[in-house]
Image (cartoon, rainbow, N blue to C red):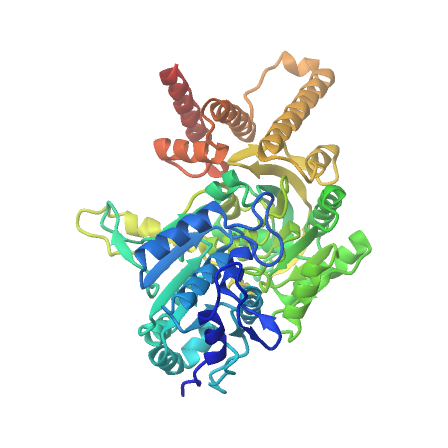
Length: 620
């Protein structure tokens, strides 16, 4: 049953006056669509340096494009932290003022985000009811719109369809890829919002890897004839980083020795990060995350040390541990309390006060929060600066969502630090931070296709599946040790393997909390060079006899040397061309093929070294 006309909020929007003239008052508040012009570029409170009081360049360009084209459907893809909420509300205010629409429906992935949207809308005089449900089916006339979840739409699609049919409606589909979470959600969204006057789709993360088409998203064949999503406006992480809109991210990877007992009673030992089968990697990963071992306590200690350093320059900087389940979250919270002497905020998704806990943490200055998936997508806690990826979830979508919680800029020079296990899939995602993706709909292999391509695609998909505890069967972690592996930054790798708690690890944990991106890269190179020189000197003093018996370096030493050489050449090419390091690595990968640098073989790295040298010679 459709709700009554939502007239009051709309009447205020229609009566909004130009800047300099008072707007109409209701309940003691003066509401004007011009308020949207003063919303900070990044909701909720703080705009990055130099941008307060005006739209960011990408927001202004997308707004102009939207208002010029006046489309019914529009897809904006912008990296987390870029300000999609502000952009969408500015469009809503413009359309309300022009009487192109009469009401809004905002669709968000979670209950928490419904309230977050309502708070943001209130700042620009657009009243949104986040408590609207299909059961009551009505809302106060004080509201200009409602905020619902994708699950709520799926439960009552005809209710929302009736609302769209009764009044001209702008539907804002936040993180629209969730409409592809299941066929039923997508079908419900299409049924509910097909008659809407306008539909604005937003996303900040790579689209899904499945083949479920997302409603109201345009697809066009690429050069191979495969349908690929087409965004009306895109603003990627690399562009945002160059503009100073998002923070650069330091990924600190930790490996180590793991021991566990399988369901057959066999004891297995493996080193996390070494070439392993899918199942062995999953079991080693789970062993590392076991709170009773030494790996996760060592990583939490390192992360807290890093947070202390960041707080020297950013006093309210906070940290977030993303856990796999509630039992692990509580155990990690207990470990953190012993590490820093302060109980962390624990957010569990089934708690009725979860949203209030997140809001209180965001507004306070406590050190740590531990969450189970709850704080992953769209949740704004701008002071988060240090993260621990302590979950076994390995889908690229979730990883991007999680990283997005840490990249929101508040002031110049802030850097995010994320601690993660040395797992090939995670290293690959970290190395591809600056690569934008579209949603690709798969197609069956044709007669002219590679006969092995379909099989390879299935294997690749299997490698990226999230392996649940139940699927692996009974499992007992016996022990774990952590060692610092490397730092991934701007497409490059830095550091040499060292024990957790060592001076070599401390060199990277102690990087200042406020630095320009180029300063971070320069400091990483300098500290790596200093460590290499110290190790070379120690080796020379310890074993002159070994010099008489030269040996070929081990494979890991060869790869480490080649990576350092490649990173040095990329740095030189960056200074010569002005291109970001990550972009150069991506161009090399396109030219030579193969996986990201973190997963490349010695031969593949050598080919890239030869290629970039060829570029330098050709340029003269």
